[in-house]
View 1 (cartoon, rainbow, N blue to C red):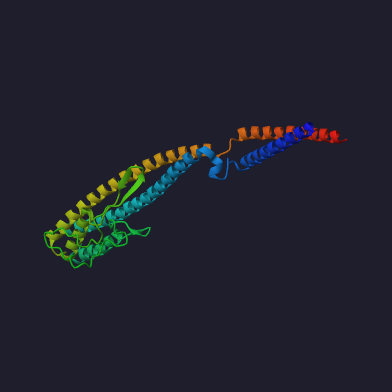
View 2 (spheres, rainbow, N blue to C red):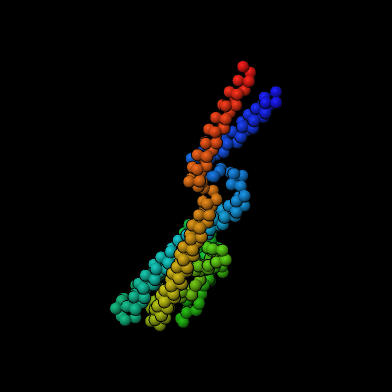
Length: 301
């Protein structure tokens, strides 16, 4: 009787152990198939909190790089728009220089060129990129230039500074592209480069018969060209800073991805060894159960 009870207990223990090994075997097979240690944080175990923190860090870096990419695109668009403004300014400067040298019929030609250029400059500064006006400060939904403003009046000779055309605000576009690193990259339509250009065009268009007005307008246009070149230099420097920071962000992201992989990915070599061990354990256990079953049968015969 005691022998039968002992055999019964042993059989139960072996069956329980077989269930555990079968679960381990199934989990290991799944890990090999999926390449992941588990499908839930519970299966990750004690590394769960560390994994969550690293995943949050990686998500933040990815967001910062998206922001950096958007800012780079805006800077590129601003740079391109200013290039077009410089081309326009050079054409106006050529017309004014020719008018002063007597090589160009005046005043109607000067009035036409400068009046058209004034509208073209306003259009370039009112560029909308990605649903936002780039030269309006933080007032992203408002075109920054309105030449119909009552304060934008005919320039006297000599001219005076007038930014009444500007409808943006005083904000400067800013973005955080890494932890603790923000960059100011905005350029507003009331910048002195654009104000000088508008003033020159207004002055020449409305005083085209006055050589002194045309001379002052030419000086203003040339100064505006230099100022616009300086803006482009600053934009290029900021674009380079962003590119450098993005590379640094990507290096950090690569490191975080590697750590996440170490936590979540299956070590295939280790899993293969475990799989073989579990299979061997089950085979040995089944063989033992078979022998016990035969012994029990013999006891009844």
